[in-house]
Length: 74
Image (cartoon, rainbow, N blue to C red; front, side, top):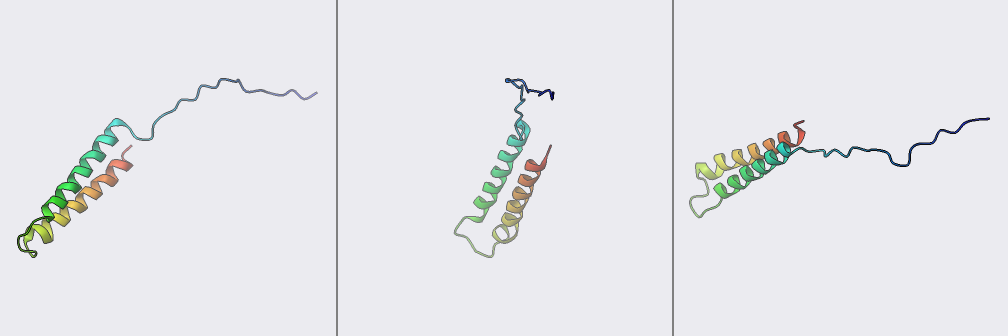
């Protein structure tokens, strides 16, 4: 006769979150950096200003890059 192995009815499965508290904090910081970049783009001054054409887009891209880092950090 073949003996059937049964698994216990109550298996202890440890549910671990994908992101830690540190990941969420870094993600919130990256969102804040992106928002600061968009705030730098606002205004009614000259459209070809250094702040609007160079500084603000670099801040936004840095915020998105920091967000990728926050997601991939283990």
